[in-house]
Image 1 (cartoon, rainbow, N blue to C red):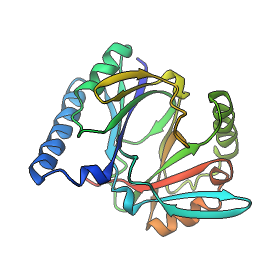
Image 2: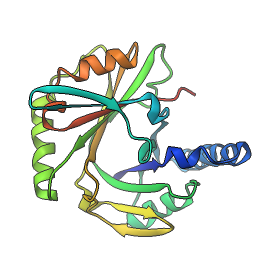
Image 3: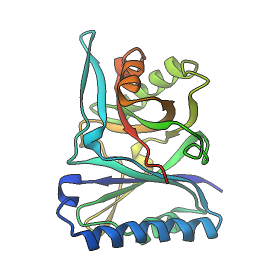
Length: 230
């Protein structure tokens, strides 16, 4: 059965306007959504990420590494990897996910995956690294992702490696926005996510220092966010 990743992209500034009761209802609704998927044996992996204000985006320009705070106006806030028989089932899964107004839910097929659903059950902090690429069109974007993949596949610190996912090209995806569904590609934004990987690190500073030495930031960018612990 094909695997797809559900990406929840939130506007954190707008989410802060929610009342405590609304926030509680959304969190409970999200937890219920995950339980339903798990009970149906279609949930492979799912995590929430800590706020973008705590994260960093790392890239290199003209040989100089730049580190900036992750943008809060459009930030990946959660993901789930699910098994679905087809787009109809996948879209129904995305439709049932409770989200606040303005949230974008994108569904992309998984190209390859090696993840550990137990990654937050062990001691230590876990950081998600979003692999971002920028290109004028999808063909060029795929070339960027292929170069990143080729240059980095053997460059992870083995004792800290907790798995990762590469996604298919944006044209293969679907997006739920303002209650409507749209087909890909979604290259109107400056940088498009091509995958996620996970490392155990002591701090965001250690995660940034490691990222700055990798080809990821030469070819694109890494957005680093800590994973919420249950």
